Structure formats: C-alpha cells, structure tokens
Length: 367
Image (cartoon, rainbow, N blue to C red):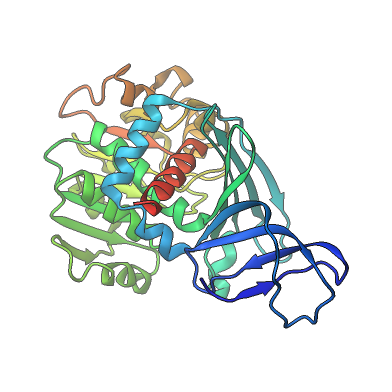
C-alpha cells in the first residue's frame, strides 16, 4: 500500500479524517476516523482504525477496462429485464456568459436490497471552443440498504460507454440481422464509442464517418486504423444516409440534419444526441416514416426534442411509439415489423444504464 497522506480538518486532539492515497487511481482509498496527537503536516499519522469504510475511486482508464462492450450490452439487457427504482432526473440550466447555456443533470437509481447510485453530469455545448469535452460526469455508488458509500467512478467514461452500449442493444433488437454498413453522424467524444459498440452487436464491415468539420471526422477514423472493418470519412451526408444500414447520430444539433426523404427501406436509425426539447437530429418526415422505439417513455416524452417536436408538428402521436428498451428486453413488444420497415431508436439516457454499468465495473474489479 502507498504511503499515507493526510486530509486533516484541524490540528486538534480527538478525531481527524485521514486518507490513504494510492496516487494511481483504481485502488482503494480508506476514509477513517482515528485518534491522533498534535503533529506537523508532513508527519505520517499512526492511528487506530474505528469502523473503517472502504471506498474505491476509479479513474477513466479503470472504468474503461472494466466495461468491455459485449459484457456491457449483456448487462444492460439484464437490467432492462429486471428494472429498478428510477425517479425523474433533475435538470438545471447553467447560464454561461457569451455562450450557450450549460446543463446540470442529477440521475439517481437504486434496486431495493442492492445498490444505490447517482450521477452528477454537466453538458456545456461550447466547450469545444476551449478544447474541452462537452460532457463531464461523476458517478457515486452506495449500498441501497445502509447508504454507505462504495465507490466514486469516472462518470464521463461510464456515460460514454453505457450510452453506446444501449444503442447497440437497441440495434440488436431493431436493425436487420444482415446490417453491414454503419454511418456515424457526429465527431464528438461519443462517436468512437458508438462505432465500437455497434460493431460489437452487428457484423459491421464498413463504417462511414460524417461531421461538420472533415478534420474532426478524420480523427474519429484514426481511432480504428487496426479495426476489422473498413472506415472512411465522407462529405456527402445525403449519399451516405442512402447507402447505410444503420445510421447513428450523436450530435448537439438544434436543427434536423437527417431528412426523411433520404431514408431507404430496411434501415435502422439511432438518435442519441438531442436530449433537450429544443434539440433535434431528424426531421418530422423521418419520424413519421419510422417505427419508433425509445429507451424510456418518461425520458422520451419529457426531453427528446426529436419526438416532442415531431408530435407538435403533427408528424406522430405519443401512441405511435411502439415500445421501449424494457419492453423489447422482456419480449413484451416485437422489434421491426418486417425487413422493409424503417426503425428508429431515440435515446436520452436512463439512470438504470448508469447503475448497471457501475455494478459491472465493481464485479470486474473483484475478478
């Protein structure tokens, strides 16, 4: 174990909070109350542990290693079959001077007698101007019976992976089994994860990348130089949509970039990016032509701009939603109605996905 460093609140007799710092991420940090004497700041504290609690802190690299896509897709499938207690998430706008407002999200979820988790996430669309990620998050995992903290996980990596895995899970139910060509629309932090996850759930042999900036699309392409599938950057979005089997969109667009007139029989459309009512990635015709599925009804009907704006325009009704991921996983609704049907999956994210991913991380840490 690494040397002890202290996080004492005061230099007083009685109790202080001591932290065992591993300096490397991924190993336990021990928070204890201990008897102490008056010592200088740099002195190692010798203490008698009273009711110790182990809490693991895992960085992004450790979370990534513990969440391979095949296992994560299976874990999400099992979670949607089982269910959990999922209160409505809380959204708070964060005003940004001279820029687009940010968003603070709080996403709790628990299973009685199991684990309790909450994610604190932020989305600041203009972060790219500062070479920063638009999405940042931390995930806190606790015991649902005692409330004792168990772990703090890098929530950004967890979110990226569970989001991509949820889309891949949906595609396993909704896309045609012979889907070979994937179009990735968007070049942000999520894009390479979407590609990798979809290539796990389907036998993809060709990937097309489109972005508003060709250079950014090339960077996504560079992530897969050793992949088993071919990959290329494209500049003609309409042509790329027409030839793709699966179209995955992960953008922060507030205007539709996918047009319904471009769609072909048998395609599957995966919409991930528009998580607010004023955002959308597909126009009303796209939604009206498709058999629509969502990750959760509550999320889609309160947050998903693609769905809400299409309803407002008269392109669809709430009752047109065929099913959600839980119903697909439990076999309560079928997937696509035919090989010629166009299917659409709209995701805004679910706290159940976060909890399932965090539990998988913990299981893999103990292997």
